[in-house]
Image (tube, rainbow, N blue to C red; front, side, top):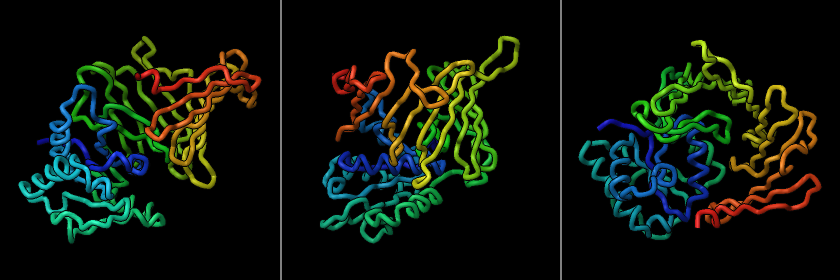
Length: 319
């Protein structure tokens, strides 16, 4: 069976906040991760999709915590499927345990004695992420080549990363082909219904982080031209993570400035001119994003006087 993913992560939803951060940081190391909240679509047969994803992954990671050990899906569906693949294919190092919370109960016999990475030691977090990435990623830092994905995003550490590996261009919907040149993303081709509609080129700073994102589209004469809107990125001086994203239009008087927290989540959106002043041609001046315990988003919209004019709650929209 064709391998499509570098790593499958089995975890308890009670550990979602940590796992989401871990996935973001693994992506910044070019690791393609299968995660249920990203890959599963409405109507999918969950057990079947999970078993297929484990079969198509190069490694299986189990995030150990009290909640994970108590979870039927983690132990009886995901771990058992992984153990079957490991024994059948004689892949001794297929299962990679990580400890995300201390556990009082004894580990399952099939995990007992297997070396694990201890993420409860917070000062070892970055080192452990690097250890996982070195173990599982398909290509090294000097990799040159291309891979297909369902979607594209700029990670919180400023790296273009793909989501949902594909074996080839999708016949329907969107797909992205990412090209690396000696470990650096050089170009991303964007396809819709298997047709190339545009491509992206990136500019980097001296630390290898994206500072500019330009999109090129057909010019109608057999060539390409750069689109008017260009994204510019800046990074927090202490954490080194993406801090602000500013979209500028050629000839326009303003753009959008997006601000992020230390976990890479968007916290604010401001409509401002290049001088930093609000642009009063929009219907709002500022949005503030609030995240609930279940990862839902509540948007607070403000006018140019700082007065609240609208609240958009994603939980109500999906209800």
